[in-house]
Figure 1 (cartoon, protein in one colour):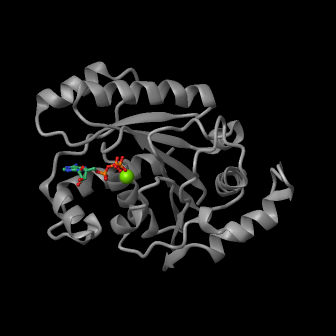
Figure 2 (cartoon, protein in one colour):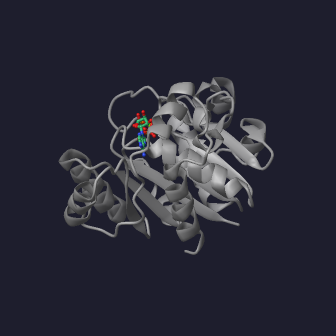
Length: 249
Ligand SMILES: Nc1ncnc2c1ncn2[C@@H]1O[C@H](COP(=O)(O)OP(=O)(O)OP(=O)(O)O)[C@@H](O)[C@H]1O
Ligand SMILES: [Mg+2]
């Protein structure tokens, strides 16, 4: 099943929790590739996996494939082998870690960025599996083609004015770059009042809320997947409902 999901939102809003939960949910029945493009690289713990070597650390390979001559880059380097050769995997779930690119002046046209863009484009447009991308807050770095290739973007939102503002901004941006569908996912919701606040102030469609759940905090403390906590956490139930909704898109 080819289904491409991007998870976005303000720092700490719950992106990694949702991305990890969805990856485990979909991997019960489908091939899944979870892609960590956050510099803190902690999606692996939500999946109970080891981190593979981050792609940006493959200096020689990137140099060889993406640099034609000093300062001249091949914008279509070979990347189709990378999901197999540089991911960690468990059964039908793969984890790919993008790594960090040092910002070198405006726009940063560096071989690492060229390579990462080509890889993401390949994952989104050419592979037939469920892709779940855990992004850093911004989505500006998506090329138009890549953005259009996503089926859905899920924008996490905590019940705070700041998080709501960020979610609305990310939504606007997602439309500008060509993401077809974006939904808000309220997270850490403890009261009806919080849910009302989020629903009233978000400018776009709101999906199932994820409740505030102490089990998420505990799973994070221990560095284990939420799905490993028993009895099944209530937050996980909401994440699975979101998975079921997205599956029908
Ligand atoms: N539903 C929830 N209930 C309680 N705590 C939660 C919930 N969702 C997330 N948290 C907690 O909030 C913190 C941030 O969650 P998470 O790491 O998923 O967010 P993030 O958006 O990926 O953060 P970052 O921007 O740092 O990558 C964690 O400590 C996590 O345990
Ligand atoms: Mg995160």
